[in-house]
Length: 531
Ligand code: ADP
Image 1 (cartoon, protein in one colour):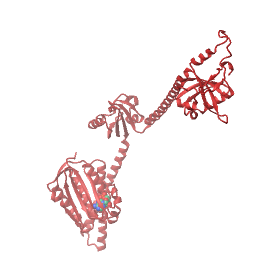
Image 2 (cartoon, rainbow, N blue to C red; image 1 turned 180 degrees about the vertical axis):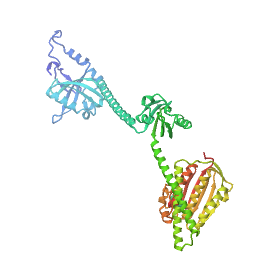
Image 3 (cartoon, rainbow, N blue to C red; image 1 turned 90 degrees about the vertical axis):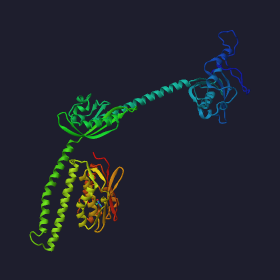
Image 4 (cartoon, rainbow, N blue to C red; image 1 turned 30 degrees about the vertical axis):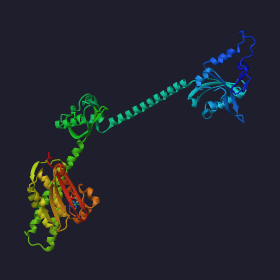
């Protein structure tokens, strides 16, 4: 800077004497063309900017390492928060400045040497302030920094930038959400299942394409109406149960529904309705999904009809064959040779297996087609005892196993259930125990009365069930590997039928078994639980 702006002879506390000129030599105090030194002094003191007049300290390599405050104006303290800096080094006044603002040393050092003024913004971390600084050289090795505190401005700028970034993020999120919502909408609309959304009163707000296809009504015909518009066929008890579950219990309802399309045609569907709750726990809306089962039902019916026709057709010739073999064995056509007799026995056994298979298949078909009606009967255990002795006694005898029927000890017990179904399950247990036991082994049929039910048990000491196969024993057609060797004839349908019967009478089946040691099968009938 030129000498007109220099200060004159400033003495620091540390008696550093610097000869600088603040103004050109003032000759005439009253000459208006010549400004008095006081004027500059007052300008220095009163300017709103902060002013610091400093000397730069260099090391041996001429690198700027510090600066000393020689003079600062009134606003310096206000703008920097620093007090009593005169004569002190900046590294004392602001510890850490070297690490936080190495550029200040570099800039002030350069300006003080070259005289090239500079203007810059800087953040002084130890003071947590932003400054806009103009620096110039009054004389070599010195600088004057004129600065403003621009922290608020910077903060405002940052807030603005943050707000801009936040706004952009929100906008981008919205775009993504909108895109996701669009994809979701397309997926729902194209779903094979019939999907409808209703308000909390059941009025339809949305119906997808499959809903139009299944019900036969167009979207506009459904929106604003209740789903019962295509009902009419919906059983009223079913409807009440559904509404109670979703509206009052606020849980998902699942069931098979029979309904009618717009053209009057009946259809079957698997129905799921879920209430969607708000944060207050109230139902906001319902989402209903139906899967059309009509075609599946038709195919299933054809399958059952076909199998049952075949089974019935087989029964007659098989019974005829049985009757003929028995007739021949009675010697009606003359005496048989020993070999002929043996062969005839084998034919008889094979025919018996076929009869059992057909009988079991018909039982399965009847149960699967839900034709079976469950009766609620009062069954005195004493009756059961007699009947089982009659039906199972001969089989036990022919296999030379001992059947102990301990049910006689509980003759006073009475169970409420379907007698035929109960007897079928117990017969299955007993016949398995007979079939999978060795001659002279014992089978015990017993029962235990509990507060909530009656538990029948059939225990044997036969071949048992291999541990790893036990979980499959109630599966359709499943036979244990040891059972197939021990008794090749067998259908693997007995326990499957028993489990279906148990489900009908709300009973439960279980067993304990150890291979080579025997098995115990249990049937638990709950008290007062038959519908
Ligand atoms: P099946 O006796 O005609 O094979 P089931 O469905 O009645 O068909 O039984 C399925 C399988 O369970 C049998 O093949 C056998 O492996 C096993 N099982 C059932 N009861 C017993 C038992 N008391 N002892 C040993 N294994 C048994």
